[in-house]
Image: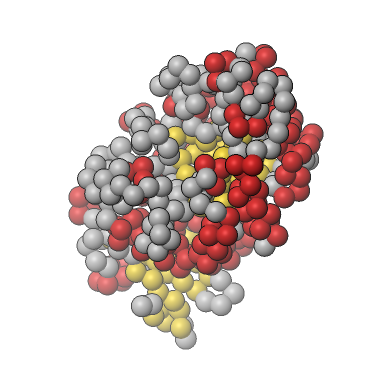
Length: 420
């Protein structure tokens, strides 16, 4: 999310479409990725701390920028900078452990198009050279690349624009996709990186042909500028996005990657309490996992970006700057094994105004349920569909608090037992 939480997200036009039912089969279980966004390329941490924190929480991926500007400081000459050394080391460590980092190919370079959004043929040629250089550098250590970050908001433009042209982004994808594939045929090209989902912009990209030049479509599902910031509204809008993708490309199954999602724990504007951020994480991830077309979530972000208690941008971390865990980090650690190894994940609407999500691993059957907060229960735009209309889990309601905190159960000897 960067640049002072500057999004003015276009939510109002997203509502009113049909939903796809949510259900995960056994075949989907092995492919889900769970990662966190880091800022090693900006020098805000070191590889050892980041890799250790990722491993302890059960993350199998991370997402970071591999900026063009520091690589081409002399026109036409590309060189991997020393400032990316920690990023390089983290890539190797995570890959050796069986993980799959996501690297973002961004932003502009001062020698082309005023250092802003890439639009001219000269800038496209130069960006393609940079892409090829990056993919060759990382070789088989990286097999996932995301093209730009939040182009739809004009992020990286110079002079600053509030919106980036979807047709121009399509042209960028059309150049980057074959370039990445020619250097690493096994690489996944992730396109979109759309702030707030932005259905209007996304549909324009689909109509231009953008889905032909990506392997996964990525969105940043923040709810901070909505009437309520509960995670269920993000799920509802993801369902709408999925329907738009299917309408645009009915013959091709394209997964959705949520490459940024989170809630800041600052004091004041946009902030939520640390306990609420943890509850929202569990609720969002549980409903995501019941949707087989969502291929992964990368939480924003792993570590707080500064010392300010009031700046939302500095308080998205699962860990504080001293690497002490917030409740959301503990919640992520609890969710990680369920996300990565569960089968037959299903979601249900509760009569009392909430959700139950069930699944099973090789070791156990599990259940997570929660009641929506009173202010949200009557808010139609914030209600996501479940995969089953049955009421067989309504019995959970008597054990659910009114503050939205989720409760966990497991099945023991054929009966549901509440987890501490």
